[in-house]
Image (cartoon, rainbow, N blue to C red; front, side):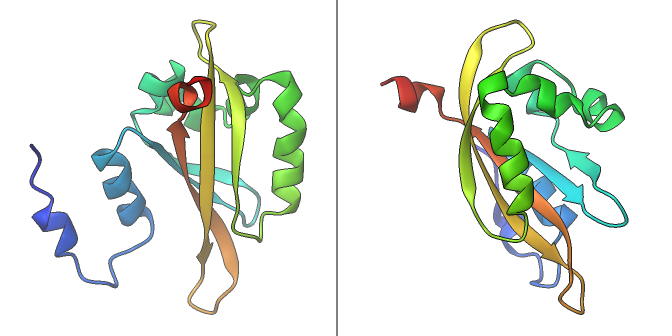
Length: 136
């Protein structure tokens, strides 16, 4: 069992990337952070992405377009519509293909990252494998 008391005791001003990293470390979910300005840039991907999709965080950070390759063709239009709604809080369910070929369902949810002045500067995502739930 993992002691999470040190995580809970962090001051409220400790947020952003460090919060996402802590959440991703405590779950099997994949966390990632996308900066929107000056152009969309993948800033962080949790290491447990390898367990979910068979690719490393380093591979995705080195080639952010790789995410698109892991989404099945029929679900790719959702990525475009999701980008158009980037300033809303929403969740979506996608079909992905593990690097070894098997298909899995994932739920993806995000929150907006804002600057101190309130401008949207990025998004933080959590992606969860829901294959067993969908197929049950």
